[in-house]
Length: 102
Image (cartoon, rainbow, N blue to C red):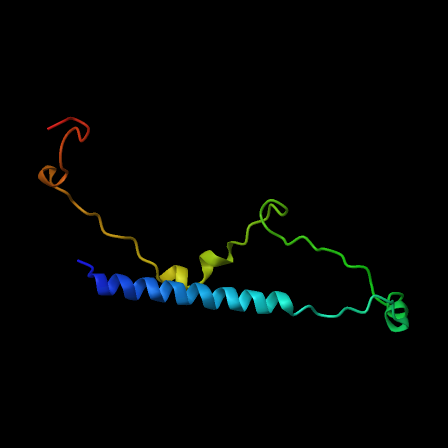
């Protein structure tokens, strides 16, 4: 059972946390970085030398229908062993109809 003192401590901690978060957010919004809007000569010269960006689609199943089967030849896969069969008695299975009311 939570006592009144403990409730007061939780409430005070929540209020302090809320005040700290509000102060941090206010200070973050007050800091506005300055941006130089005028284009510089240096960036204009570099635009001729930069190659256009091209997105290369990765070779995965929908784009590439070949499968990498080397995983089946790896040592880790070869050391895997099948699980042994588990036998369960009918007394361990539970009710015949779990939806039937008691």
